Amino acid sequence: MGRMGKASSGKKVARAARAGGGLTRRRNTSYGYPTFIAVVVIIGIALVAFSRHEVRASAAPLSAPTNDNSAPRLGDHWHAAYGFYICGQWQANTPQFENTQGIHTHGDGVIHIHPFSLGKRNPFTGKNANLGAYMALAKGRVTSQQIKVPGGTKKVNGDKCSGKTGEVIVKTWKKGEPVDAGQIYTGDPEKLKLEDQMLITIAFMPKGSKIPQPPSAPTLDNLSDVTAPTTTVPAGTTPTAPPITATPATTAAPATTTKP
Image (tube, rainbow, N blue to C red):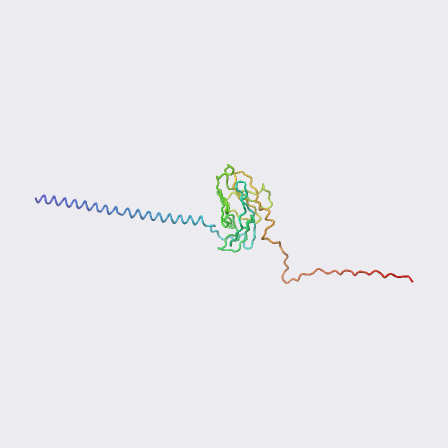
């Protein structure tokens, strides 16, 4: 009986040990689910932060260019004629809009560039006064891959023009150059620096197409916001009136003598 009691007690101890070990394993594995949840939460937070950053980047109208004090400078007043030529059709001029940056249009097919201030509030001087800055302010966009006409159509490389594959083509001229002159801009169109008396055609056409000059090119000779120069008299100087020339007196005809 003593032996049987000892055997029975040993079995109970063994069962208790096994039960305790099983509990320990369950407790150890119970940390897996909270860890999994924590990892999911961390990944979710990271994805939300990344998506917000991407939204801000895509929604920001302009990058943050550094201040550039080269031309155009404060006080300069430049003009560049431009137009959108999409699949062989000129698009309507971008409507007039104003802003504090000094890069705008009067709805005349001309980009008006005259910085109002310098510093962080208006960094769009020098190389920062570029096509990308104007397009962002106009609520449009042009890159080497796509064109978004302000308030109008959008085209992406590969879209068709009369059955032919189109692509973004930006061509520039100096005022007075013939249409066959000029050059195709091969860099990032957003970084195309605006110049005074410049002609720009932003086109979406099949490769090798002839690109015309913007219809607004003649407007550069008749700008509404440019007045004819006036002659300024230096301070402290009294204008000299031209000498007055006396008019010779009229000689009266001699009286007629009557014979007696």
